[in-house]
Length: 305
Image 1 (cartoon, one colour):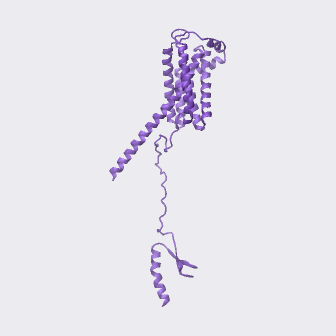
Image 2: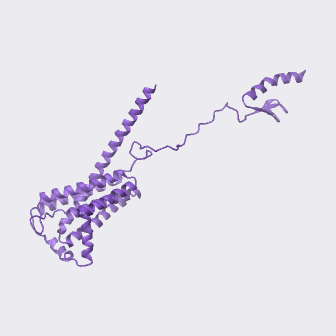
Image 3: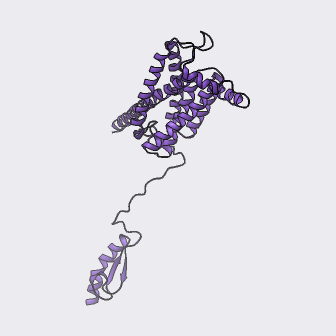
């Protein structure tokens, strides 16, 4: 009688357990009924506790999209002019601009070398082989054909590094530097070897310095250099490239040494400001594109509802 009552009492629970995927087990104290009483163990079919949903992974046709800051996958593209270098390079740009203006006023309308030019030319001018061949090779890099090859190589490098902003900076830097030096030549009016050969500032030197500054800024960003190390790297690269091209121009008799100094300072004055301008323009454009994309998605969601 007691056993029948126990079976009658346990039967509904047993059916409920089977229906919900549970299976009875026996053991000491199981289910709170003492030894040998049936207990409930959660089986694989139990749905009483929801399992966390797995995050879907990228499918075969998955393609990462550009984020708000313009980089694939949403990662922002680093700035051309890092925040740590803005103040020191901005100071260098101001000082370089003052030197360009001072030399331009000093040599305006002049057609001969200054005293310092004559002393340097006595050492560098008329270089013989193999130095003359090296000077000609460097000079070729600043000529129309050579400069196109150099800029094209720099563009390919920037695109391989997935730095489209740097590619724009290369094009803009080369173009702005050439335009600036050309305008300054007409404004200053200094000549060499005849009235038709405007010399101040040296466009070749400015071009080489600009590309060196671009490369140094990218290297400083990839190496995560601080303010002192990054500024030193930029100035060292600019000095090496500008010094080499300036020497070549003086050795070939195409420019006075002060022309090369003016071209070097022109690049240092223009490049940091241009890098900052490209950064701000790129950030503004990528922000607008992301906003337009968000607006379109919001409109599509409202139409769906």
